[in-house]
Image (cartoon, rainbow, N blue to C red; front, side, top):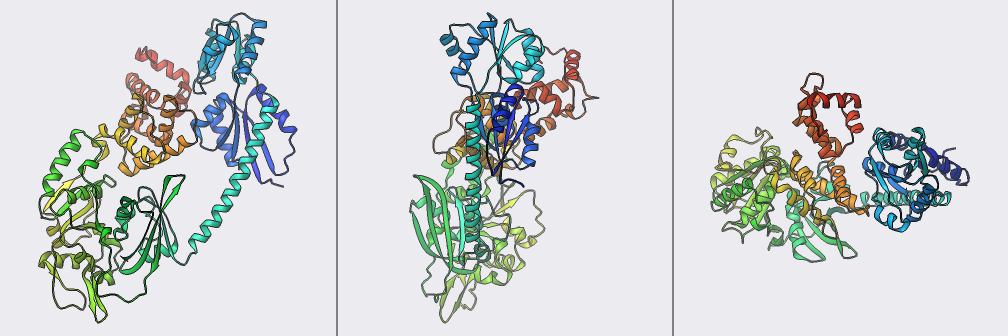
Length: 625
């Protein structure tokens, strides 16, 4: 009969023997404990296998724990060596030798060797290794006569005929770690159960619920909200709510500092009561909950739309980056902000086109007037005229979005996906300079400037040619991140600061080089996701050394993404049989510099043997490899 929880212990050699004895003494009736005898060379494969078998929490010691963290974000309980464990091992070593050598895993938690020397009054030689081959070679070459180390080092030292002392962990420590791991399993399952209940409650609520993070990005929308807003079933998560549903006025609410607001809003052609509530935990902002209720009250003669929803305070001062590319772009954009002619802002997805549209609006004489973003793709064909132009009848007058824009700025989004009816309404307003409300008799003057946001990789075939001619009098192209890599470290720091409760540490020079090296094909959305992932990784870490932070950046960006980038920039790595050794080794050196891979990891990644790597080195006469 399968048990409810599964724990995996990753140990090697003598430690595995101790762990097995401990496991045999346990009396868990609801938990399976699996033991995988593995070292740093085989931890990744063991973890993948354990996860496929349903393991949720892992227990590992020193080197295996460090290697685990480099490859997985699953729950880990680490078996840690205390200072007293090292001192006892040193004392035992001095009984069999006079020159003890401490073997340490290069990527493991730092050990205060100086403190150990002071407490034991012994000079310690240290060797640091990356893999089995490296450890084997280091033990052979060391000057000491007795090796102190965990299972891996003890095993290889014994194999080489060297005197060795096992740096051990007690059965009580292992039992305590397993008990903690079981508690984590239980708490995790309870949390999943609560989350499923909350999700069911949210999805079946009779009113619309939209949850956004503290930066206004959508994290969740229930079925009722998707139905009322036209968000659909996919593609809206992580997007800015203000871009998809500008009439809600989330940005204005965030900037207001209010804890809650309740207003009537025109959403997807229907008037709704919109309640926005700021969410916090212990003083730290979590996001905003938007609750939508259909408004069935009679329309009033005086329009009740809250125009604060159509204000923006973003200016050129909010731009992060002083590269030559951005300086030239801002100069051009500021010049075109002074014109009343329609403007097309082009660029790759997520380059900040909507952000810069707000900067242009606030740099113009229209800055005190409404800023009206329109997601044209969600306006129903049958409702186009009523949403854009408004309507009149015996019960009152309802202003459309183009009238509400006044003498401000209308920003058209997703125009190639807009219906023909929406495009016809826009064309009418632009060509005539006026329009009629549905049921109305007097023309309404259209005074706003029009800015169109377009993806330069997107086909414009969906836009009516005559409408395109009117919209594209002026054009402006936003550079992609890879066109101004100098600005990426500053953006990374700024975005990460928003996600953390305390300011992040200054980036190391290696981290700066890594961030500039990567191409960021997803631009700001990818950078934002990486920063959020990095902040989440840091939340579970106590080790904030520059090396640890660098490895977390690698994990946040993605090892495979970085490796693919290196191979793309060094094509010799794709054709090792025919490429020049110098070109191959240049690529390998970059892999070591960016990803901090060991020789064994590089050989495995490139499907090479270590012998082949050394042969390439000899052929290229590259003494640095």
